[in-house]
Length: 155
Image (cartoon, rainbow, N blue to C red; front, side, top):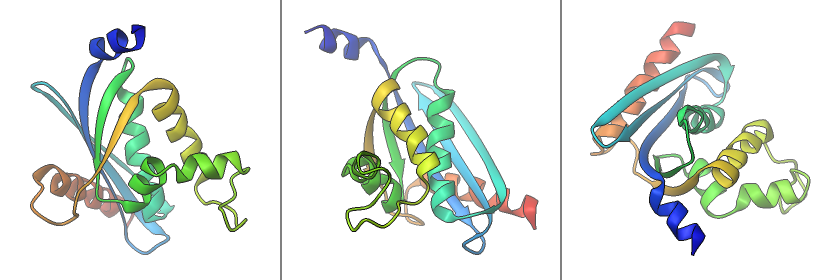
Protein backbone atom coordinates (compact mmCIF):
# COMPACT_ATOMS: atom_id res chain seq x y z
CA UNK A 1 0.00 0.00 0.00
CA UNK A 2 2.86 2.39 0.73
CA UNK A 3 4.21 1.83 -2.77
CA UNK A 4 0.95 2.95 -4.38
CA UNK A 5 0.89 6.13 -2.31
CA UNK A 6 4.48 6.84 -3.26
CA UNK A 7 3.82 6.18 -6.96
CA UNK A 8 0.75 8.40 -6.98
CA UNK A 9 2.81 11.28 -5.56
CA UNK A 10 5.46 10.95 -8.27
CA UNK A 11 5.43 13.32 -11.22
CA UNK A 12 4.84 11.80 -14.65
CA UNK A 13 7.28 13.05 -17.28
CA UNK A 14 7.10 12.28 -21.00
CA UNK A 15 10.45 11.89 -22.76
CA UNK A 16 11.15 11.45 -26.46
CA UNK A 17 14.68 10.46 -27.45
CA UNK A 18 16.67 9.87 -30.62
CA UNK A 19 20.22 9.22 -31.71
CA UNK A 20 21.87 9.63 -35.08
CA UNK A 21 25.21 8.84 -36.63
CA UNK A 22 26.95 9.67 -39.90
CA UNK A 23 28.84 6.47 -40.54
CA UNK A 24 28.69 3.78 -37.90
CA UNK A 25 31.04 4.54 -36.23
CA UNK A 26 31.38 8.19 -37.07
CA UNK A 27 30.23 11.57 -35.78
CA UNK A 28 26.99 11.24 -33.86
CA UNK A 29 24.30 13.22 -32.14
CA UNK A 30 21.61 12.59 -29.55
CA UNK A 31 18.55 14.54 -28.51
CA UNK A 32 15.67 14.40 -26.06
CA UNK A 33 12.48 16.31 -25.42
CA UNK A 34 11.15 16.30 -21.87
CA UNK A 35 7.63 17.44 -21.07
CA UNK A 36 5.89 17.80 -17.74
CA UNK A 37 2.52 19.48 -17.87
CA UNK A 38 3.02 22.71 -19.82
CA UNK A 39 6.80 22.65 -19.34
CA UNK A 40 8.94 21.49 -22.25
CA UNK A 41 12.72 21.22 -22.56
CA UNK A 42 14.86 20.16 -25.51
CA UNK A 43 18.41 18.90 -24.99
CA UNK A 44 21.01 17.59 -27.41
CA UNK A 45 24.68 16.80 -27.75
CA UNK A 46 27.11 14.75 -29.76
CA UNK A 47 30.43 12.98 -30.06
CA UNK A 48 33.12 12.98 -32.72
CA UNK A 49 33.44 9.17 -32.97
CA UNK A 50 30.55 6.99 -31.84
CA UNK A 51 27.79 4.66 -33.00
CA UNK A 52 24.08 5.11 -33.54
CA UNK A 53 23.25 2.75 -30.66
CA UNK A 54 25.49 4.66 -28.26
CA UNK A 55 23.72 7.89 -29.22
CA UNK A 56 20.28 6.30 -28.70
CA UNK A 57 21.28 5.17 -25.18
CA UNK A 58 22.99 8.47 -24.38
CA UNK A 59 19.83 10.42 -25.21
CA UNK A 60 17.81 8.40 -22.71
CA UNK A 61 20.49 8.64 -20.02
CA UNK A 62 20.95 12.41 -20.36
CA UNK A 63 17.20 13.00 -20.22
CA UNK A 64 16.73 10.80 -17.13
CA UNK A 65 19.72 12.43 -15.40
CA UNK A 66 18.04 15.85 -15.73
CA UNK A 67 15.11 14.83 -13.55
CA UNK A 68 15.62 16.27 -10.08
CA UNK A 69 13.51 13.68 -8.25
CA UNK A 70 12.24 10.13 -8.86
CA UNK A 71 9.57 10.25 -11.56
CA UNK A 72 7.27 8.04 -13.54
CA UNK A 73 8.63 8.31 -17.06
CA UNK A 74 6.90 7.53 -20.33
CA UNK A 75 9.91 7.11 -22.62
CA UNK A 76 9.36 7.12 -26.40
CA UNK A 77 12.05 6.08 -28.88
CA UNK A 78 12.30 4.77 -32.42
CA UNK A 79 15.24 2.59 -31.36
CA UNK A 80 14.28 -1.08 -31.09
CA UNK A 81 17.74 -1.64 -29.59
CA UNK A 82 16.99 0.70 -26.68
CA UNK A 83 13.36 -0.28 -26.18
CA UNK A 84 13.81 -4.06 -26.50
CA UNK A 85 16.99 -4.14 -24.39
CA UNK A 86 15.19 -2.49 -21.51
CA UNK A 87 11.55 -3.56 -21.93
CA UNK A 88 12.29 -7.20 -22.68
CA UNK A 89 14.91 -7.45 -19.93
CA UNK A 90 17.83 -8.18 -22.23
CA UNK A 91 20.14 -5.65 -20.52
CA UNK A 92 19.35 -7.08 -17.08
CA UNK A 93 20.15 -10.55 -18.40
CA UNK A 94 23.43 -9.40 -19.90
CA UNK A 95 24.42 -7.79 -16.61
CA UNK A 96 23.44 -10.91 -14.62
CA UNK A 97 25.71 -12.96 -16.91
CA UNK A 98 28.68 -10.64 -16.44
CA UNK A 99 27.75 -8.57 -19.50
CA UNK A 100 27.51 -11.59 -21.74
CA UNK A 101 24.68 -12.32 -24.16
CA UNK A 102 22.83 -15.63 -24.04
CA UNK A 103 25.25 -16.99 -26.69
CA UNK A 104 28.17 -16.04 -24.37
CA UNK A 105 29.40 -13.27 -26.68
CA UNK A 106 30.19 -9.96 -25.00
CA UNK A 107 27.37 -7.42 -24.74
CA UNK A 108 28.08 -4.02 -26.26
CA UNK A 109 27.72 -0.57 -24.69
CA UNK A 110 27.87 -1.98 -21.17
CA UNK A 111 28.99 1.36 -19.69
CA UNK A 112 25.83 3.02 -20.95
CA UNK A 113 23.54 0.13 -20.04
CA UNK A 114 24.97 0.17 -16.50
CA UNK A 115 23.94 3.83 -16.12
CA UNK A 116 20.57 3.28 -17.78
CA UNK A 117 19.72 0.27 -15.62
CA UNK A 118 20.56 2.27 -12.49
CA UNK A 119 18.39 5.22 -13.56
CA UNK A 120 15.47 2.99 -14.61
CA UNK A 121 15.56 0.42 -11.82
CA UNK A 122 16.76 2.37 -8.81
CA UNK A 123 15.70 5.96 -9.43
CA UNK A 124 12.77 6.28 -11.83
CA UNK A 125 9.82 4.13 -12.91
CA UNK A 126 10.14 3.94 -16.68
CA UNK A 127 7.59 2.69 -19.21
CA UNK A 128 8.97 2.15 -22.72
CA UNK A 129 7.18 2.95 -25.97
CA UNK A 130 8.47 2.28 -29.46
CA UNK A 131 7.48 4.79 -32.14
CA UNK A 132 8.05 4.49 -35.86
CA UNK A 133 10.94 6.72 -36.91
CA UNK A 134 10.68 9.30 -39.68
CA UNK A 135 6.89 9.09 -39.62
CA UNK A 136 4.05 11.24 -38.29
CA UNK A 137 5.26 11.76 -34.72
CA UNK A 138 6.14 15.45 -34.27
CA UNK A 139 8.27 14.95 -31.14
CA UNK A 140 10.21 12.04 -32.63
CA UNK A 141 10.86 14.05 -35.79
CA UNK A 142 12.04 17.04 -33.73
CA UNK A 143 14.45 14.79 -31.78
CA UNK A 144 15.80 13.45 -35.07
CA UNK A 145 16.31 17.00 -36.33
CA UNK A 146 18.15 18.02 -33.14
CA UNK A 147 20.34 14.89 -33.13
CA UNK A 148 21.28 15.32 -36.80
CA UNK A 149 22.08 18.97 -36.15
CA UNK A 150 24.67 17.89 -33.58
CA UNK A 151 26.49 15.77 -36.19
CA UNK A 152 27.25 18.89 -38.21
CA UNK A 153 29.44 20.21 -35.38
CA UNK A 154 31.89 17.34 -36.02
CA UNK A 155 32.15 17.49 -39.82
